[in-house]
Image 1 (cartoon, one colour):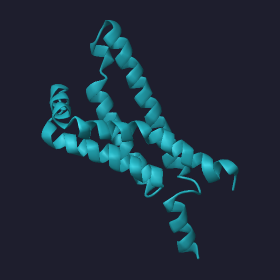
Image 2 (tube, helix red, strand yellow; image 1 turned 60 degrees about the vertical axis):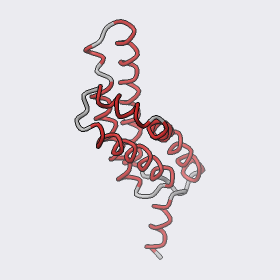
Image 3 (cartoon, rainbow, N blue to C red; image 1 turned 135 degrees about the horizontal axis):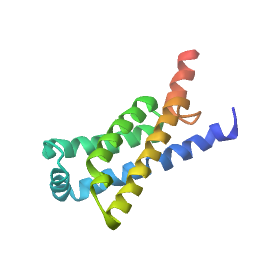
Image 4 (cartoon, rainbow, N blue to C red; image 1 turned 30 degrees about the vertical axis):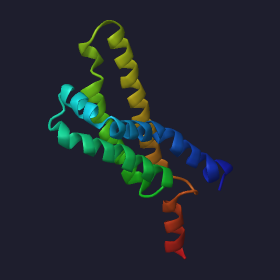
Length: 139
């Protein structure tokens, strides 16, 4: 087992999902404004979509950090990110600085999707609840 697998993948998991943790907390702290913003972006049933977004962001991120059901959490965050990207960063419908900012956000989200897909493929590493459960199951 490499040194990176012992600690590096834990650090990578934390860094990868930090944006989801902060976004989920922000949605809670500004709940009413978040519902209004989600509705303004054309998301159907914003009053239902908001708690679902919080659940996906916080729940998925916490699972990834803990390394518990990591592959499922990565897939859930991929799905969430694809939907959020398509509703929020439609840069092709914009112009000027708004288009530039949203194109960057769109590409950032593609990078997150790529990182989550890589996490799904390689797994969480040794410092994860998934690895502990696998070791216990093998004993």
